[in-house]
Amino acid sequence: MTSIISDINKTFDHRIRLGIMSVLMVNDSVDFNRLKELLEVTDGNLASHIKALETSEYITIRKQFIGKKPNTTYEATLLGKQTFAKHLAALEQLIKTSK
Image (cartoon, rainbow, N blue to C red; front, top):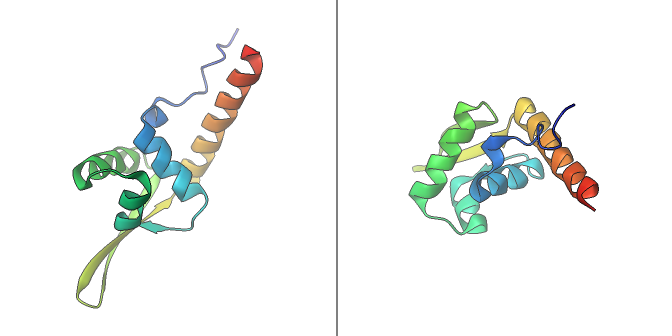
């Protein structure tokens, strides 16, 4: 028998990673400053959670210059979208089963 929490992905346990993926699921791409503003986190905190998602290959990072200013944007990968959707479905199932 499979546990009702077996499809809950530990990578998304932290609220900041959950927030990053939630934002990227509904936007094609989002830049660093917008993510920081939406999630109300510090640069360092956001950067460390972005690194964890990048290491898991759930997001891609694109660095470019706009004029003379650096701009970093993030996108959810296909793997990231699929894994996050599976995670959300598992949470939903857990809630339904817990009633």
